[in-house]
Length: 161
Image 1 (spheres, rainbow, N blue to C red):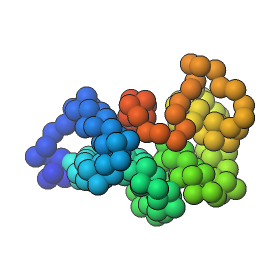
Image 2 (image 1 turned 180 degrees about the vertical axis):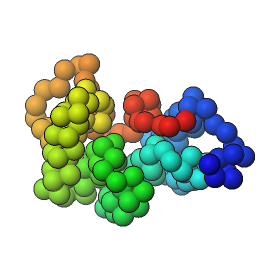
Image 3 (image 1 turned 135 degrees about the vertical axis):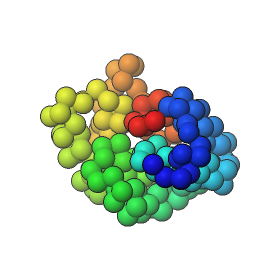
Image 4 (image 1 turned 90 degrees about the horizontal axis):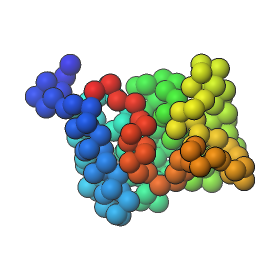
């Protein structure tokens, strides 16, 4: 446990609430505030992927999907190799950056691994499937926002709070 994590103990609910505030800030075109909040969460919860996803989504929301993709690939996935949620959001960032072939190269193997592991019903897998097959209908129960971050991303993101 880091000194910051010990000084600022957050419950899972606290983490989710702060992340929701960060996602709301990003959706409200306040990417600086969102990035600051997620950077702080990264300090107090370095072992979780939620702040990393939030930082990437703040970049995407600011019109910088290529920067988000670089961050996810070069930092987030180095800290959490092969994390399926990070892979899903890397695929999103690549898609938003117009790099569809690269996105498919990240998303399809992740979807295959997660389905093999029995995790095919996870929100990040459904999001990846929507990115891979944008013209395919998705049942209402499986609908996940593919581009906008909202509280569904927070509630479905793993956090080892």
